[in-house]
Length: 210
Image (cartoon, rainbow, N blue to C red; front, side):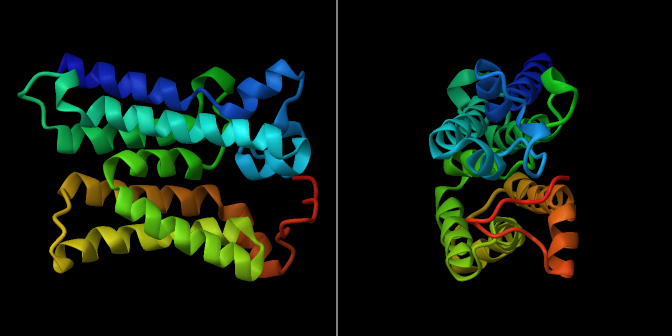
């Protein structure tokens, strides 16, 4: 039990290492004070350019992958611990850490990049499908928030339908998929409000202040 708790705490702390806020400190920039006010890759792109945004995305995706690997690799803990449970649990802890980082006053990003990184380790096929959904939605609408929410909503469906197609999915991974979908919808609630009003910013336009 001590190993499990230590890994969950480590995963949360990894998630709390926000890419935009860490890189922003090197530039004297708090991304939360600009653009949409979100500490994520999209706002980083709008405020500080694509080089800064790539660094942010690399950190956020990388920490999600590292947290999932920390829990999912059976070589990193005793054989009496179920890696199919601990992997998704650590991944979810990292996503929560990204959204509410202890190092930055519990004001972080919206969790999509970190969740994507975790899926690259836990379920690469799911990550590929979600990327196609996300990219296709952006190509049609140029609205990143909408693309992210739609991809998130597809995730629990994949968790439920994959076993019907002969692809076994651990129950803990199905729970992770559902929890991430709910979390991303929650963190994108302001985007959904703007979508309903018709003023959600599109790529190429600067968002209004939060």
